[in-house]
Each structure stands twice: as structure tokens, then as C-alpha cells.
Image (cartoon, rainbow, N blue to C red; front, top):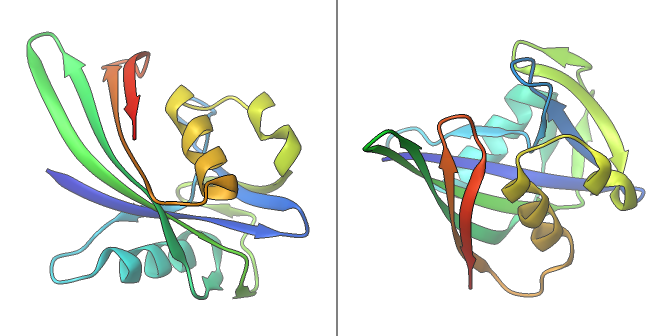
Length: 149
């Protein structure tokens, strides 16, 4: 099972998202957790690598399992989503991962993205407790089902 960590960084009522070139969907900056690395350390490291911004004091907002169904086979991975409003650095505009852009919080629902990501972003921004969830997708990332606790 692959583990990934990402972070929503909010500044002046906007969040920084990454537009992936494959589908043109917007996503939360982050990436794979390395062996012997905590998920929090991975979120900080990956955010810096992808954006040029060193986030500070991220707090966990969600722990999610993703199941990707391809015929009778499943791929499973876990995602740990953090939130912060503290960071420093010079933001990159484009990286090998895609294009970075700030988006007003109230316009995020209008962006093209995986359906589950909309819920994850809302939780990171407005949820008071840590959320646990499972998202079940087709191989083409069509949402089949979701369960949130």
C-alpha cells in the first residue's frame, strides 16, 4: 500500500493548488511518504519540493483510503491531508508535476478535480476534527462510492 501526504496552504482567503497535466485536474500539492519518514515530515518535504514554499505547523485534517478498481483487481493507497496557514518561500509557477495557481476558497468547487478531492479540501478548510474516509474509484477515476466518518 502506497502512502501519500499533502497539505492545503491557505493565505489571504486563497489556497495553492497544482494542475496535473494528464487530466487538467487540480490537486492538493503533496506526494509519497518515504521509508522511515513520518507523514507530517513527508507533507512538509513534498510541499516544499512541489511549490517552493516551506510550510510550517501543518495539522492533520484527514486520513483517507483510496481503492482503485480495475476489472477484478484493486489498488489501495492511503492519503494523509494536512492544513496550514503558515509558510515562507518563493513560489514556483510551473514544476515537473504541473502548474501552480492560487484559488479563492469560495471558487474551489468550480474547478475540475477528482470528486473526492472537493470533499477533502472542504474538510481541510472547515472541518473541526480529523476526518476518516474511503473513496472507491474506477481506473478512470470516476467515483463509485465514498464513506466519511
